Length: 482
Image: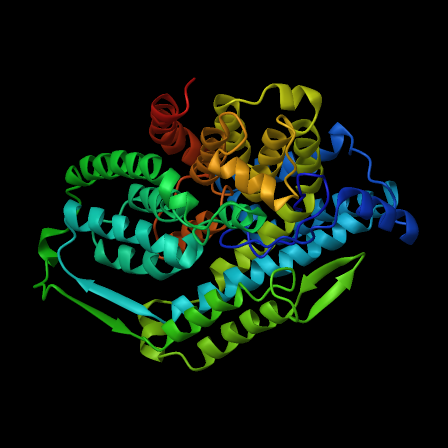
């Protein structure tokens, strides 16, 4: 579930690509509307209500390790059951229909985007017929990071993960996939609002489109540069290629199913068909808010037609099947359903007197970052931006205030504060498998090809903490430490 900085819901296109603002009604007008329609005033959920969310995370982490057969057979039941506990509590425990309705709408939007990108990209077979050297791999990862800013981290991940795996056939290791998640699925998308959901939300709120590339470039380049060097060192030591199966390379790149690039373009273009942004777009009206459905119909239709008319050679070459998207669909039913109380508590604290008093580049970077690793980075971004604005008398629902904050016009330290929020939200999404939508998808695709990926905790303990955390400390020291 996604909440605005005023603890009111936002409409979520996807946790991985683009989100759009659900409403801009002034707070007082919304309160009056709720009173008129009889909608309850939402109270803070109790602390115990986050238990299902924590339990789901624990089971995602421990299931594949300690009770693999049970988990792979029953994870749909577990995820749906835990989500149902929270949803039923909201509906009948506190009489809150609004937030579960929004959670359902947001989930549909999320799975529409992710499934359509997954299916459309599955019909594109990119084959790089070159020897998989460390330099070649680094080049592909950097290219993927750049492309992430043009088609989003989800689009780039789905398009390139299979070619990356094929390129390294015979020597592929889990670290290849981990660095792909780090560089392409997360950090790479920090330069444009298209790259990652919180940046697009910031753009809708008033942050100029070119602001991100102008202000995020140095942290982006620094983080990617360090990761590229580390990956090169890892890959240079990889001598696992079978010497008896070394083929002759043509050094050519071939593409089967190029027609599916058209379907990808349709998906990316449809993201902008939001009734809250473009007047006249059909919408479902609910309690004074507009929910898109045309965009989702287009995405689901693209998923169907892109598979129906795909080049069968590409489908077969990609060993395409629906299991990865099925797993993501069920796991995120649980995450969307159980996450509502956690996000509500984060929102409340971020705008409390205590939260506002702690505003600084240091707390904004680490606060936004750490929470973005486990919760949706889009509402986390909004909550901390709202708190930062409120600490200096600004309002996140006033575009002029956000523009002034981004431009440093009338607010002290506003530019560095906003960079800290943006970089923290995007970068830290790589800390866990659930930090960003494509992470879990890339993991699932890798496992489908036979790569033994680390568990939830294994990912964090073996890769995120020893590799990412020191890099994030370097970014903090260089750009945000005051």
